[in-house]
Amino acid sequence: MSSDGGISSYVLKDDVTRDLESSVVKACIDSQRKFLTTSFSPSRMTECPRRLVYESLNYSKKDEHIRLSDNAGCIKEKWSSRLPLIKDLEIVQQKVLAYDANYGITDVIDCVVRYKDNLMVVNIQPVSNDEFLAVQKKGALRRHVVEIMIQMWLTEIQGGILIYENRDNNDFVMFHVKEYGPVIESVKKKCRLMVGYKVKGSLPDRPYQYKNRGEECRECEFVGECWNKGEKHEKT
Ligand code: SF4
Image (cartoon, rainbow, N blue to C red; front, side, top):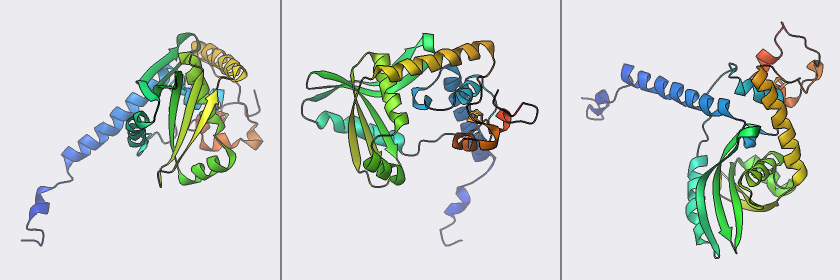
């Protein structure tokens, strides 16, 4: 008998686990596709419009993988039990579905709270240590500010609390975000443009020149499709 008393021969990596693992990956990717193709997400509104239309038209991606948010869900859950401990604060609703069909935009908001008689949207952002240090030094990241402003617009709530938590050490920092009309106007303009292309099944111009691809192109999941040899590579 082996040193573990033979118990290891009862714990298998076999066809059953392989089937289950590949089914989980497929189910997660299908579910991501379903959600992402039905709408544009406020969390990605600062990205290249062509990239977002590729996503909404369900083009195949380079290295499609499950976007695991590691411990993000746990951190958000933790805040939902921590926030009610704050004096004068009550959680009005958690996981609030917000959308505007005209602009093809949908989101699930972490929660809406009432703080000293003011309704506020709460957006919780678990971030890496590097991002957290950058936020402490330079303030909230633009993509997150735009996201919470969109959430405020969708819910018609004038204020927001943006919370960053460092995933490595649970340190946190908060920002109070107020309405800012010009951001929403530019989001609406971008969504109108993207919805128009989506309906036609065509793509917006690339915002980057080929010979000087933006940093976003290097991380873009559609870079192969976008810059394939069959297409004109100059800005269209
Ligand atoms: S490769 Fe660049 S230009 Fe093309 S969709 Fe992606 S980010 Fe936009």
